[in-house]
Length: 269
Image: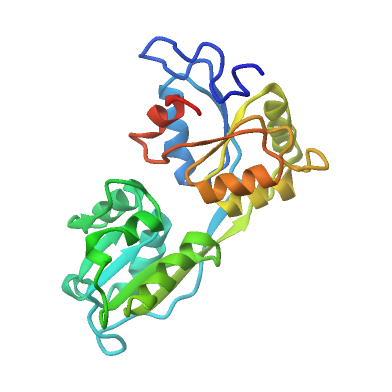
C-alpha cells in the first residue's frame, strides 16, 4: 500500500513552511466555506481543486418577534450559513432575548462576531452537535426555551441536537432558514474531479449530504467512491458513510481554519 493510501502522501514530512506541498486535495464544501478552506490549504502548499458539491439557498422564514416568542435561555447557531440567513428573522429581538449564544464551530463563531455578536460560546473540544451537548451550559435545561437556528436537514447531528435537548426537558424552537441543494457541475468540472481522484487526490467532505451529492455527480464506478483513496471528513458518522459507499480510507480532520492542516498531518492509525 503506497503512502497516499495510508492517508499521508509521499513526502508529507516536508519543510514546515509548506507542510502540505505533496498533497493534492479536492475540496467539495459549498461556498463561501470552500474559499477559506482552499486558502488555508494553498498557503500550506497543497495543490487544490475546488468542486463544491452543494450550494446554500435561503428559505422563507417567519420572523421571531417579542410578540410571537418569549425570550430564550439560549440560542444555538449550527453553522455560518445559519448566522447569515437566520439573523434577519431575529432582527426584531434585542440581544438579551437570545440568551446565551452558542455556536457549532469556529467559522460560526467568527461569522457571529462579524455580525456584532461577540459574546459567543463554542466548545473547545469538538465542533459538532455531540460536543455542544456535552457542554455544561446545556446539561440542565428542563423548562428552558432554546432556539436552534439551522439548515433544512434530517441528517445525524442536526436532529440529535434538538431531540436530545427536548429529551432533557427543554422547549425547543427551530428556525430553519436555508437548505443545501446539489450543485450542477459542468462536464469539464466532472472530468477534472475524475482525473484528480484517479491521480490519488484526497477528497474533503464536510457532511453526509456532500458525499451523497458527490455520488450523484460523479458515478466513478459500481461503488461510487471506490476510486477515492482518502476521504477527509470531520466526523465518524461521515466517515462511516464514505466507507460504506466504497472509499478506500478515511481520516478525521478539523474544518476549523486554524486546525485543518495540523489534523491532516496527524498520525493515521
